[in-house]
Image (cartoon, rainbow, N blue to C red; front, side, top):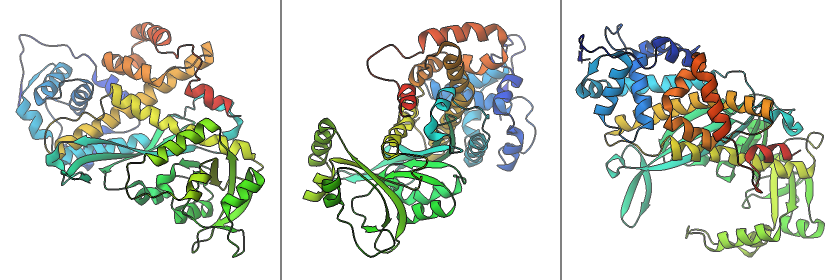
Length: 448
């Protein structure tokens, strides 16, 4: 890497080598760099930490140019670095290095649990509560071959998709995967079997509804909760008698029965259902009638079934009552709040111009930063706020705070002089405001 030093005007590093390295413990950056062949020998001038720091700054900055990255790296090291030197280092080996860092981070949990989540007895029977979801964002059209997106009358666009799995009890992520829009959620349904462990609870939306995956989770002692796909045949447990679900619901009002799903697979599950309010029903009917997907032609039975919440699970009645089983799905949208805060304040969906390698480097860096934010910033502060003040910290407000004062996030855990002042500002400015609408932590606690 081409680096020029200026002994006449040395620049003091804004964040020390040790402070940034501690954020990744026990992950060894040098070991991962060697495995990816990104670093074949010890650099003389610029460090791995300096290069990473410059990309973190680029993620939060409105200016994602190579020049801006070079300046940030120079501020970290006290050297002047050319943008050509930075461009030279953004290659497939660097992307592999970032992927290895991200994979190592999500495997290394801090051991902390969300204090406010421990107050809910609905989840005490589970080791983790895993929510899987995906988020997409558009890219430059020239990247369509690397990230094929949806097709319309104007052609095919380029769209990236991130698959993520989050543990709601620790507020930390367990898995990330970067792919294309064309890799639909259903094709990723079985991936959860590589992540979940016996005793975990998995909550996912209908996009991941695959009977074989549900059956395998039961076989591996993994609990699940999912909405029922209306297209799946429902049979009386252990028989060939098919259940007319609409008729059963109209006769009973609500259901809690053991059934078998699928004409071929016959996956045994517990089916629970309850009626929804008139307002929710009206919203569902409006959404179904105005669905832009022209391939859908909803039947009369489908429209009638919208009057109920219908879920399938393998969690026994001894753990959840019918009402509790129907309520639990509300926590799934937590991951959507986190995605929204990342897009709004960490600008996860605003990628730099460049080739696929440059875009991948940016996205993986953004995910690493977001993972560090959850682990080292949000969770400790949220726990402290709830434990000491009995109030809740807003993920969105804290993300905005960190985006505006990004360096503070890295310095705070290891600089006692700044820690107290920063925490005081966070507790004052990043709590949920008093309002009629409940915050997510309030709704989480209210489920029991």
